[in-house]
Image (spheres, rainbow, N blue to C red):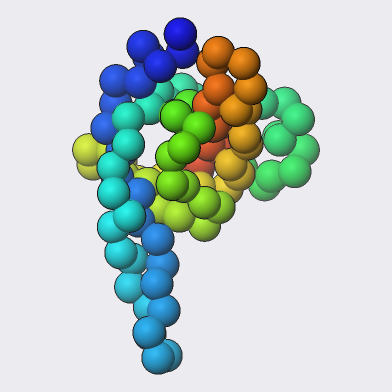
Length: 101
Protein backbone atom coordinates (compact mmCIF):
# COMPACT_ATOMS: atom_id res chain seq x y z
CA UNK A 1 0.00 0.00 0.00
CA UNK A 2 1.16 3.52 -0.79
CA UNK A 3 0.42 4.65 2.77
CA UNK A 4 3.54 2.91 4.08
CA UNK A 5 5.54 5.73 2.44
CA UNK A 6 3.71 8.43 4.44
CA UNK A 7 6.52 9.14 6.88
CA UNK A 8 6.89 12.94 6.73
CA UNK A 9 4.73 15.23 8.88
CA UNK A 10 3.37 18.34 7.16
CA UNK A 11 1.44 21.29 8.62
CA UNK A 12 -1.21 22.97 6.48
CA UNK A 13 -1.94 26.68 6.83
CA UNK A 14 -4.80 28.49 5.10
CA UNK A 15 -5.38 32.20 4.61
CA UNK A 16 -8.37 33.34 6.66
CA UNK A 17 -9.99 36.75 6.24
CA UNK A 18 -11.48 38.89 8.99
CA UNK A 19 -12.68 42.39 8.13
CA UNK A 20 -9.94 43.81 5.88
CA UNK A 21 -7.00 41.71 7.09
CA UNK A 22 -5.88 38.14 6.70
CA UNK A 23 -3.84 35.64 8.67
CA UNK A 24 -2.44 32.18 7.95
CA UNK A 25 -4.26 29.82 10.31
CA UNK A 26 -3.11 26.28 10.98
CA UNK A 27 -5.51 23.66 9.59
CA UNK A 28 -3.68 20.74 11.20
CA UNK A 29 -1.06 18.19 10.25
CA UNK A 30 -0.94 15.16 7.99
CA UNK A 31 1.51 12.42 7.01
CA UNK A 32 2.73 12.20 3.44
CA UNK A 33 5.60 11.51 1.09
CA UNK A 34 7.39 14.26 -0.86
CA UNK A 35 9.48 13.99 -4.00
CA UNK A 36 11.00 16.62 -6.28
CA UNK A 37 9.33 16.99 -9.67
CA UNK A 38 5.78 17.14 -11.03
CA UNK A 39 3.80 15.13 -13.60
CA UNK A 40 4.45 16.20 -17.21
CA UNK A 41 0.76 16.97 -17.73
CA UNK A 42 1.06 19.81 -15.19
CA UNK A 43 4.41 21.20 -16.34
CA UNK A 44 2.76 22.98 -19.27
CA UNK A 45 0.12 24.56 -17.01
CA UNK A 46 2.63 26.12 -14.62
CA UNK A 47 5.34 28.72 -14.66
CA UNK A 48 7.47 26.87 -12.10
CA UNK A 49 11.18 27.06 -12.09
CA UNK A 50 11.21 23.28 -12.08
CA UNK A 51 13.99 22.87 -9.50
CA UNK A 52 11.46 24.13 -6.92
CA UNK A 53 8.46 21.96 -7.86
CA UNK A 54 7.53 18.96 -5.71
CA UNK A 55 4.76 16.39 -5.45
CA UNK A 56 3.39 15.35 -2.06
CA UNK A 57 1.37 12.11 -1.87
CA UNK A 58 -1.02 11.90 1.08
CA UNK A 59 -4.26 10.20 2.22
CA UNK A 60 -7.34 10.93 0.10
CA UNK A 61 -9.16 12.54 3.04
CA UNK A 62 -6.43 15.12 3.75
CA UNK A 63 -7.74 18.69 4.16
CA UNK A 64 -5.54 20.53 1.64
CA UNK A 65 -6.60 23.06 -1.02
CA UNK A 66 -5.01 25.08 -3.79
CA UNK A 67 -3.59 28.25 -2.24
CA UNK A 68 -2.73 26.61 1.09
CA UNK A 69 0.75 26.85 2.54
CA UNK A 70 2.44 23.65 3.72
CA UNK A 71 5.33 23.55 6.17
CA UNK A 72 7.72 20.69 6.86
CA UNK A 73 10.60 21.41 9.20
CA UNK A 74 12.25 24.61 7.91
CA UNK A 75 10.75 24.12 4.42
CA UNK A 76 7.70 26.03 3.19
CA UNK A 77 5.65 25.19 0.09
CA UNK A 78 2.68 26.79 -1.70
CA UNK A 79 -0.02 24.43 -2.99
CA UNK A 80 -0.60 24.91 -6.73
CA UNK A 81 -2.71 21.84 -7.64
CA UNK A 82 -4.53 19.09 -5.73
CA UNK A 83 -5.16 15.96 -7.83
CA UNK A 84 -7.67 13.43 -6.50
CA UNK A 85 -6.44 9.88 -7.10
CA UNK A 86 -8.97 8.29 -4.72
CA UNK A 87 -9.44 5.05 -6.66
CA UNK A 88 -8.69 1.43 -5.91
CA UNK A 89 -6.68 0.16 -2.96
CA UNK A 90 -4.14 2.98 -3.16
CA UNK A 91 -6.48 5.99 -3.15
CA UNK A 92 -4.56 9.19 -2.39
CA UNK A 93 -4.08 12.86 -3.26
CA UNK A 94 -1.20 14.20 -5.31
CA UNK A 95 -0.43 17.72 -4.10
CA UNK A 96 1.71 19.78 -6.47
CA UNK A 97 3.66 22.41 -4.52
CA UNK A 98 6.27 25.08 -5.13
CA UNK A 99 9.03 25.54 -2.57
CA UNK A 100 9.87 28.96 -1.11
CA UNK A 101 13.49 30.14 -1.09
